[in-house]
Length: 136
Image (cartoon, rainbow, N blue to C red; front, side, top):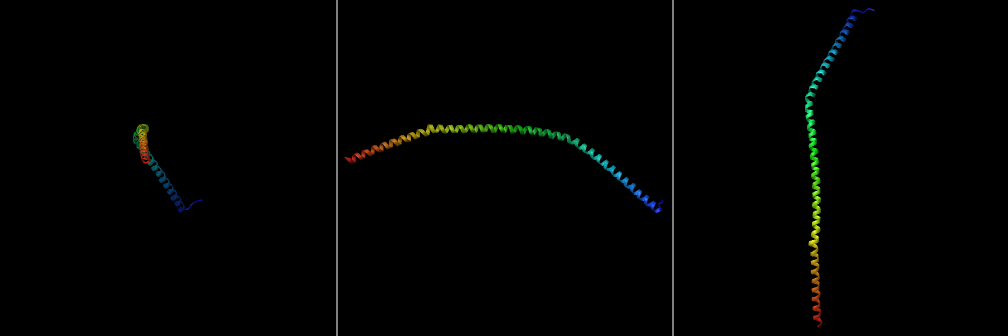
């Protein structure tokens, strides 16, 4: 089966277009591969530059963690000592209140009771004198 001239030309034209498209596709893949390779090189360079910075930041964070840990421990110590001091002061205030009650308040109550007793005694004595004068 023989093809006519126009069919042969059309076949060759399609074949040329397919070959051109294949060449363009291969070229595009080559450009993409080259671009990816260049991008990979740039990423490696950026990582090489970033590694020392990352190490410095990591060291800084470790130091910061140690410092904050020390500050936290010292704050806990201060709070514990403060709590002990407050409890000690509260105990001393309570002891002082007890001493004041025993040494000041109790004698005043006793003195007040004594004065009240003497007053009642004088009142009773004075009342008896007036009663006796009225009978005579």
